[in-house]
Image (cartoon, rainbow, N blue to C red; front, side, top):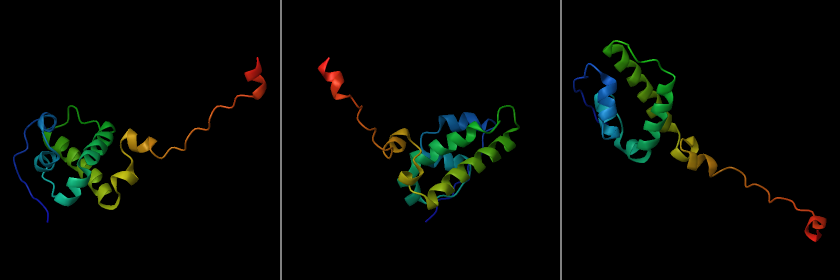
Length: 116
């Protein structure tokens, strides 16, 4: 099942996105379909990844339709990543990145150093 929303895009899409209160609102504002099952599992990961991708985009000062199209493409890219990858595999958040780091070996203290 996919959800389709087609509200008006505000002249300043970034202002609208900043005030969005849920992942569903992001998809609605940018007029993207989504599978609620995917969004329920990976919503924070999708939005975090979208933010990472937006850092590489220069949206400030663009006309609203172009800014909206770029934001839409970035959200779509982030969403599609989680259609084939689990949040655990993608490791978007630091806690998941460090969860797989090999443990650091204990510090070696020579026996002679203990006797001093």
